[in-house]
Length: 202
Length: 214
Ligand SMILES: [Zn+2]
Ligand SMILES: [Zn+2]
Image (cartoon, rainbow over all chains, first blue to last red; front, side, top):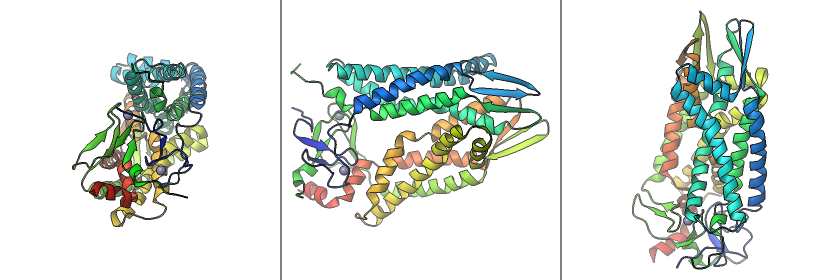
């Protein structure tokens, strides 16, 4: 028979994993304030997640960079830069950027939204699958930052004056915001809530 | 304030699903996993602290090289340009986009520096003795910035940038680029060598070892 710390009247320190009685306010070993679950986990995760989802629209629509070549300037959006990679036969790179910038953020936003809704409805179905989904979301989320690094690098490398220059556009700032907010969102979520649904011996 | 009864020190709750486990004495290179969700709970590895410390010190050397030497060079129709990591972020801040520069600076310079110095600050006291006040601050700092480890992602970004630029200019790697790869490799190995729960347990060596001896 397995039981959780919560059921046994215990609390596990989020920082150092020392188990204490629930009447303790601070961890004996590391001094951290003890919480049964991350405080305001659901509310904070929703707030970060919805802001990220809202910011994803300007991230897709606004230009991520402007290339100035000999008096000509050309702006491109995230999708536009993926298409231009694909057209210049750099298919693997196009795939990497597509997955990192389009697939991963959307998957992460929808996945965390699903976890939040299922926890709030007290769902008992597919608990282990949902725990694995959360682990996967935490793992892949960071990879979205690739395109932000590409733009930052291009901007600082291509400053050859006469030849060309590249300026960052507002789209990349918005996109960086999306990535940062989704990381905040997955950190705010407490995976133990997935398992907390009342278990009636099923 | 009363202290926890020693039996509590023998328990560990899964960080991901809260199931309680009684700690077991592990053999070398063994790890304990949660019976319900499979999350890693704690592990044992001989010489983990020496290994992680050596790797972190190598990481510090790589970090210094990373921020001092040129990172990438680009040349096109006679014009040449070398950039260093810190200088390029500084220029980005001054000329183009302060927000982007702050973000990149935090992810590629500030957090990696905190990570390598923090690890060294944790591991040296543990190597010498088990109780040094203040170690827990570095522990918490290093764990706090863990989700923001983006160094290997940056390497993918560098490769993408290369592909994008090869048609219009010659690009070459500087010493700092290789140092950056070295940094990613040794820091990944250092983090793999240690387990934070097990390191915490060593800080309170008294209680928990007493239990194991029984
Ligand atoms: Zn603690
Ligand atoms: Zn578990």
